[in-house]
Length: 223
Image (cartoon, rainbow, N blue to C red; front, side, top):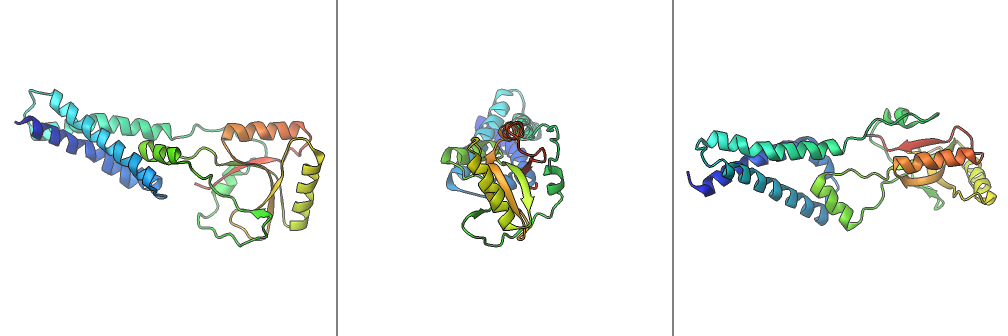
């Protein structure tokens, strides 16, 4: 069998885990597609195709097309599994009054009603071009998706009053008002936005040590 055909068979085998991963996982990664995300993803596919072809080429004595195809699957499947495993977050110890779990039970379709300029909406952080490329290359999920919330209020005036009191104390905390995610009639006093879990946890602990209510909790977007 010609070397070119062996490499092609191995490369085609390598595309099998790529296609399966695309259908199950990568569609979420590519949902917010940009040129840099696409570039990173294309490079990933090319590298995996190359590895599949290389494995098939190194088995010089193998002549069976089916076995060469199967050999091409092995290395890309392993690398794809490792990339996916790297995106699985370790279970986090629950914080007192941590509402993350309960919020995850909310429906995933939300509509934010426009608020006044001082009211912000919960949103994912804007990615840099390098972060977009890395997401396409590795399937990495954004990490800065945590918020530290002091309290929820039904009344905008109550939320505004608490935020002003926090900012006037001069303790190094900046309070901002957010519309509750998935609701249009309540407001959150937020002292930390778009943080990693570790950063949010440390900020909550520092806030409680400074006299904030122990009900101060961490929140992130529903899965």
